[in-house]
Image (tube, rainbow, N blue to C red):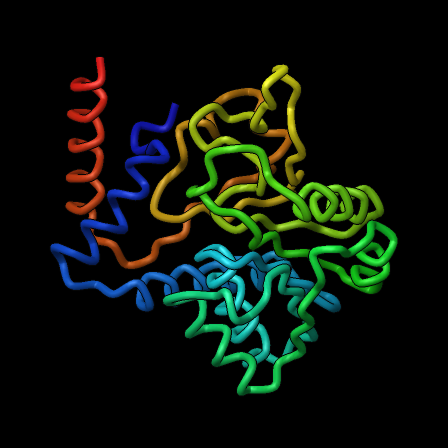
Length: 244
């Protein structure tokens, strides 16, 4: 197991401590996450169009930053936003406004989207970036995410490379396996070739079951001092002790 691996709760504490105690802003953290992921993606080789699938949360906000930096570098791309832009909030909304005003190719996809339509939208892509659901997700993906995840995985089987932002959508960061329904059946989960995870490994990544979904894992530095991570880990452990 990676000694520096973090739980879902510790990841949340890292962001909170960095912002509340150290004066870093969410925009700075999102910018660093998106730029670092773009650098990783470019180092892996981009030989055609990149499709970035974004949800409405901060994971989607990371995707908007990635889109901006890919555009600056001259790469062909498209952003598929699976949410009404009016529902975006905070740092994600800010970064969406930037790429919208810059006239980057953004398509807002209806929640009623069909599987075949998604497959058509992915046509011609050499990479798909999964920026749908982040570590904040703690339950089965709700519609329309199951059908989006299915289409991403189909494209992956067809030869399109998939990069997950922070963790594959549908993966339980602590358990290292897809979320289960009330009957114990596994829900949908993106199968990535590469996962660009932020700050540190997530504890679930060390489970043998996780590899099928994370692919290779690269840790992206988002500018958080190591002391912040140590404080978050200590506070997380104290919380767990209290619960016991």
